[in-house]
Length: 319
Image (tube, rainbow, N blue to C red; front, side, top):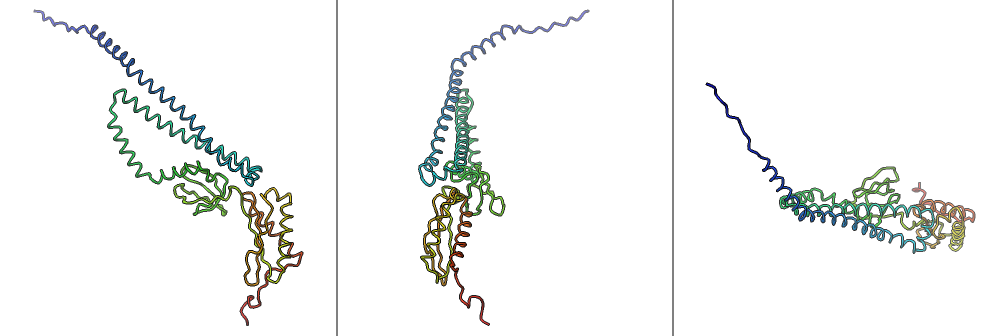
């Protein structure tokens, strides 16, 4: 006998596959006509909103950051300062502020528009947003509690740059350190003091700022003379030296106005102190003080004006 094995036959799926593909094609076409158009419209609106925000940010930042330069240009004394070599520094700082603030605000606007566009597209596609938003909310709260100081530093850095409180090259007093600013970021400010020490100060920890490089510097010169000297003669000599100093071409470029003799500032024991004020360019006050003090001392010697005389008992205890 011969055993016959029945042949395995498969159903004809050609028609089924054709029906499935046709159904998928119809659904895809229907989605493209309805939700697809909406998704495309949302993406286009997102790109347009981003472009408009970037244009608006560029205009607003340029207008806001130019106010300081405009105020300085309308001020007579400050206009003289900006009319010297400080003009290039002021323009460079203005350009850096515009670029920094513009870049920061453009990044924020891009992030916000991108997130809104993405969530809208996900809603149109049909993806569940509830779990995603809940997770993002919990994560945001956790990050907010854990990075409070970081957020504070960044916000302080943003307002510091936006308000032009100081910039690279300025000599500032942060309360903890005094020095020349070498680098400014949104989180920290790096400065170097007179001893060469580099200080890194977090922007959020700065309570007050004393900027010694904005506008002008004041050079105060106190010259003590003997109580026995004729004060009118002393003031006359100091005025002559101050006028000659203000007319000197080597130093007049560093002065905003000629030195002013304020008169007798104090009388202590056998000492009479005469005070002189010289307004000069930022950072030039120490050099002006030294030179003016040296010239007044030489004029006192030439006119025989004596310095304060110590009483005999001041030299030491009696023997």
